[in-house]
Length: 232
Ligand code: ADP
Ligand code: MG
Image (cartoon, rainbow, N blue to C red; front, side, top):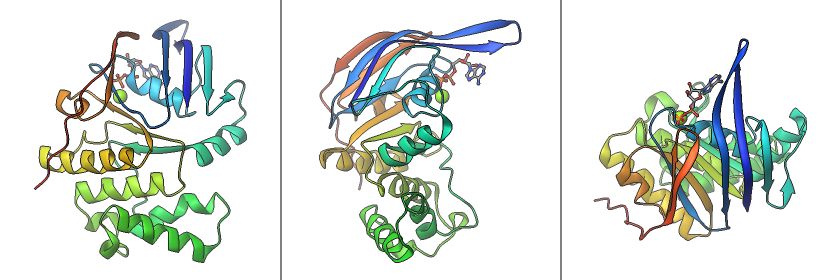
């Protein structure tokens, strides 16, 4: 599903440049649930943004769903993002003046679906994350965990090939974090390929593989025995 080879990223800083990713190699197969771990500043978001076509590597190869990613113009990148990828962020990134249903339905608009179909799919995915009864509520009327579940529904409603989550539990308390991880585990059990960036060991242990980043290099990449998220 994902193949990256010798990825480097430099950020230009005036006349100098910052070498943030220093030769990253890994592959992700369909159906994996991978944690990308590392302390703050280790390059996790930079890597995820490259995988998510939100940013470009300075050097290296990236193949997504058998498509070589190189010299994409913004239209093509947006197209691939809409059709292949789902995103979840620490800060939810919901649109404040749209209700839960409208937030989930919005990306489907960019897939060219008609309004009725968009609403039908949005309801279906809200139900999947346990929030059907909250469809008409604005983000400001939802708890943090509910907001993140709306964001997850929005990310998966277009049936992406890969779901990318950057610190999805970073703004949530432990109990709510585990509820969100339970949802992520359930989605993975249904066959979804998911990458979760986190700096929390307990969250990483709920995935099936841990890739550790330090100062822009992978220091460890191992399969683990998954801890199931317990919610009561
Ligand atoms: P993490 O997500 O692991 O905390 P990041 O990928 O956000 O790490 O950042 C890695 C390094 O790159 C940090 O030193 C950060 O300051 C720097 N960095 C991130 N984004 C930019 C940018 N747009 N321009 C310049 N430097 C950046
Ligand atoms: Mg980050």
